Image (cartoon, rainbow, N blue to C red):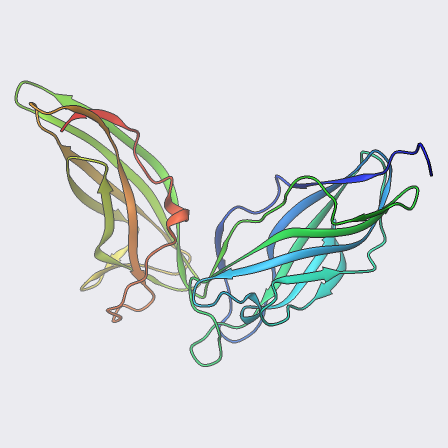
Length: 302
């Protein structure tokens, strides 16, 4: 109709969308309802009716084909299930059709993407411990109040965080981090601590005695680790299933009283662990899950 403004759709990731995290999956059966993304659709200019929504589900790790991991993709409006689809091999996109979602002008509709993950074991799985999956909004088909078609015409984005899949895994939480400079005529050093908690999810977790790997931006770092809440085996700290251990790393970064001043900091680079005390092959933790495990930066002569 001439002179009538056409409707539009704005897409945004919801603040309720889950942060990057570890998700436990079963060795023997499908794990249902892993939440990947919460997003909002807002009708602009006029009311709109949404008929189709496209969602991309991607995988990273041992496989890059999400269909190896995901057996079903589900879409919810609020708490109501409004669609279930399956991924085709090699195609990350699923289309939820015949939705008939009415959104009033300027109103928002909150939608949630959940998936079911296939069993994870050495015999039948096409994916491996630590592989990740993520979901993103990728398309829409709708009509506005004047029946103008909105076909993949939208503003904004909604991309979920990576969810790392394990049957057993450590969950790390940063408690505190500090660093202070000590400077005299003969001493130039930075001292501090990094404290974090490790919870064993899905089973016992074993952390290598030499597996708290620290690094620093400059200088020479020395690190002393003490652990509470874990027991010691011949080579590992054992954290029992559902128990939490506290790791305290005492930090010393040696400088040079005659050097040039620069900012230094220390951080947790990795944590070496496994689910078997006798297993000589250790796993690391996803780097993005510990990227904030670092001290403040301080000036130190190097």
